[in-house]
Image (tube, rainbow, N blue to C red; front, top):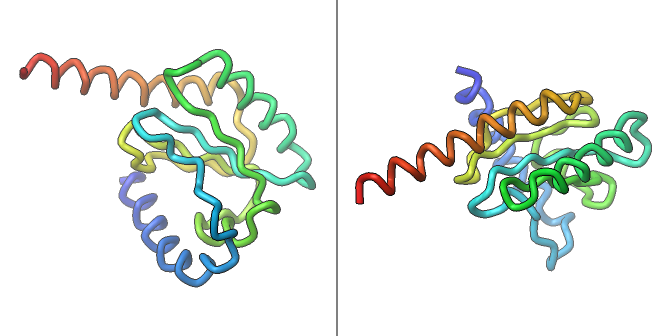
Amino acid sequence: MFRRQMIGALAGAALLAGLSANVFAADWVEPFPVKGKVTVVDFGAEWCASCPEMEALMKKLQKDYGDRAAFVTVDIDKYPGIDDKYLITSMPTQMFYDVHGEPIWVHTGALDEATLRERADILIEAAEKEKAEAAAKK
């Protein structure tokens, strides 16, 4: 049920994107979700008290996970309107995408390392299971 609510919210965000798309630089391409990888995006800002800690954690996890997942940090102040596009109402906010680029979870507030790892691992395991099933059918 949460996934349906999340996707409904993102559909609304797509409508807002049309209103705010003109504020993005013409050559800027969103670095997420990363094609073919589980992706965790952390939206933050320099003025946010807990955002530097989240950014450091995202960098640590990217190093730990390597090619198995992508951990992306986005400073909303550098991309005016991105908060409207993704319905970001407070910082930090994390969005979790599956290997197909589908949004699965959204969390507002700082997350601890164990929770970030748990959610990323769930998505990675699902992708690996799907890949194994597809290979078995061949």
